[in-house]
Length: 180
Image (cartoon, rainbow, N blue to C red; front, top):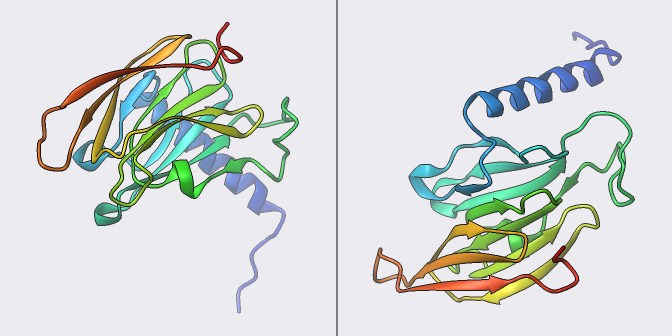
């Protein structure tokens, strides 16, 4: 039986995450809005532009696209909910069957649009520092794609399961407690 040197495990994990982050950067992961469903899905790290957080995307084929948020900065966490041994956050509500994600400009907030097939069919605003989620709208939509985002609102194109083109465009304002 071969024994692995336990002291090398943390270093190996650090190298793996560093390579994943560099890979994500090389493939243009610094977009504020990303369609991550279906053929657009790219498994791996999707880094927050100019921020300490990232989303790990799981392309689970017929079971949809699922996500987990994590604190990607190495070192001492700056936010109360995140610790060196608690870097990942995932929820069945907003993490299942995700269609698109959008990073709020210059803030540690993430908007997540889900499908109703295996998810909730809602749009969520995640406060990444506090690990809280607010439901912006329960769309009950087969497909919802984030079109634009600002510090005040997010625009979402919605389509039903019978049509591929969006049937309506919604502007969802953020709660006043979130706006700058």
